[in-house]
Length: 221
Ligand code: Z5A
Image (cartoon, rainbow, N blue to C red; front, side, top):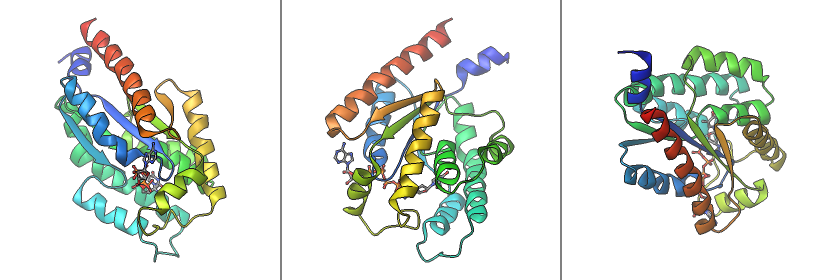
């Protein structure tokens, strides 16, 4: 098959990002429904996680009793989970023409391990290339909210995990990193997630319609 034909047949990779309690889980099914209405077969997944092995790694990462985990161990576990997720789920789905919709991906690593923990972005970029090769999402919706408002939403829901125990300053750095990356790239779209759900979803619908239109044009030219 010619590379162009492969590209046309390949599914698209959409990620949803943002800080705590921003509404990713709430909006994932809404996004899946819009994509399915447009005629696409959609695989919904999440990171860390998405396969049996990667979900075990997720449990380690979120376990609030793992108070001694080093930042390097955390970073490498995240990429280990991602390697398995790509191998077992994401790459086969994209190759078969399915669309993959993922709750968090490597932008979260830049935001949490880069912005939050202070790792040099060059190191994250090296791991990104090692694990993903050239694969990057085709569209990333970054839901943006003041961390205090997001934490208040998250707190209402359940016991706090290992990440959620971090201080507000950590989440402020996470947010800054997401916003900076979103401003610097065309594949990211920033959505104001502080609004009522219906407004957030109008914004998401509008961005997805633009993306679907671009995809249709790519396939027809
Ligand atoms: N992590 C990392 O460090 N590095 C990485 O590379 C990756 C991840 C991939 C697990 O992620 C952790 O892994 C995460 C970063 C780290 N850190 N933490 N914590 P996760 O995505 O599973 O966990 P999360 O960010 O904590 O997700 P969350 O708290 O479940 O947030 P959410 O999915 O964005 O929010 P939600 O559950 O949809 O909504 C929260 C509440 O707000 C809920 O009650 C909703 O009904 C309500 N809500 C949602 N939208 C609205 C609006 N618009 N108005 C009012 N209320 C709303």
